[in-house]
Image (cartoon, rainbow, N blue to C red; front, side, top):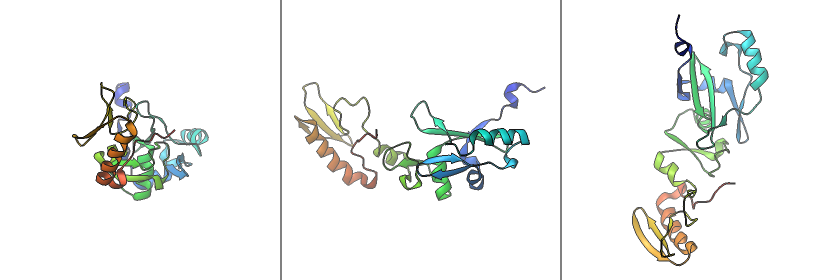
Length: 191
């Protein structure tokens, strides 16, 4: 008899599932990914199908990921346990492609409206990030020095020392917006 471990479906990326399967499972309403009533063919028997649809149909899909708060969704397809982020599923359903990364244009990780999502590479996605929580100056692109002055450093180059953080941040914003274009983010935080 196989071990319990061998009987458990292995976990794979959601990119293994065909787009048509995702369309059968999910729909987007506003900013949220919802479960559809899934067909009987998605399940091994009638009881499982009926119980699953009674519990999940028309409810938001996913649970918050402990690490970053983004919604993570799991489902089974062809015996494989698939896991993926809700924003990537929404983008894939809208664009019929799985990009390297998906960027939330407004920075709100719970706003999974297709209009708020765009394909990005890692560096573009990082450019659109908010100010880090451990930033002592409170402004993206600005460091607070031990002498109490604020320095602007952009792409490892020093651009000046300032007595107030807003002046240093203005220099960073000018440089970063010219360099990063549509992926520029001034460091705002979404509440």
